[in-house]
Image (tube, rainbow, N blue to C red; front, side, top):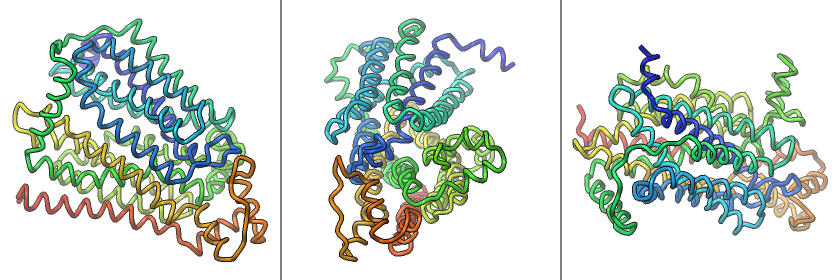
Length: 480
């Protein structure tokens, strides 16, 4: 039975899914380590930006990425899927490569914006291709395959970037991402066949105007608008997994204990997963989220399928709130792993139901129109995630900021960080002047300034989201 269904998929379906895998490989291969690349010491090949600068780059640009598909989808309908895919891959590969060649805040911001533009062109085309190469009998399994490819690419990319950066340096991450997109460029040129589509005869301005009109039309539905506004809280909290947790692990969590535990089981396994310094890279821990999803999504979906969509979303966000809170409340690496597992369970329960729910509250015949609005809370949530990951984290939990505060309180002066005196140099000098080592310095700041208290803010965002969803369900939907 299943074999006959697989035979129904045309070649373009499989090419589209392969391109999705490589595009996610490139994106998450970079995004999983981006917070570290932007903020780590320049003597490691990273950029040494502040947490606020990091939050601004990641939050603003990613928000733009999720907002632009509103308009880029219309371009594909007008100029053709294949032509726009070629343009997307040229933009993407150029952007990824350029990011590895520049070092100033402005040029890094611009080059990441180029990546976002390419990704925004790609996103609606690939989803539409899967939709147009499936029918009523193959759609369900077709999109199941598609989301499996998303998760595989999202898991494999960070593994490769983590291992490669520790061997060859940071620049290889950008070369890897650009290379993955070049593979896609070859695939689209040689094997991608334009699916049947209704050609858009409107001008670009008319298409954009129509898209905006459709969104305004959908947002006149109070149920939809209130739900989308509430879900901004979920995406703000959810994105801390990529925006902030890598920095928190890098600065506060001793991952040597996991490396040593793995080494006791198998030295080869510890070497394969860990770094040459005898630690586990932050992105490898964060990437457990994608690994857990690959392993357990079907099981969790089966468990929550009987729940009403809004109840599944609420339950999932409660679990995510607990997971993200635990991840930031401890310096124990094993608890961080447990927290990421809990987070993944909540994500698996809530995220798929989010899209399903938007489709369910849409009036008949307006499903696509309503689904087109689902990116709005994702875009705003990414922007706000950048704010909490930037100035909020910098003031409450950033190790360098807290160290400077401690030195000022003690009247200890150290020269300013510069090209010749890096963040690592500053940390070493501070430890020497305070008569301790790096572990002692970390523990002292942990005990004196409680950087873990940021968990309260992240979990509170989730709890507030759950409370508002409960009120929404009780009073606006008037569920029994």
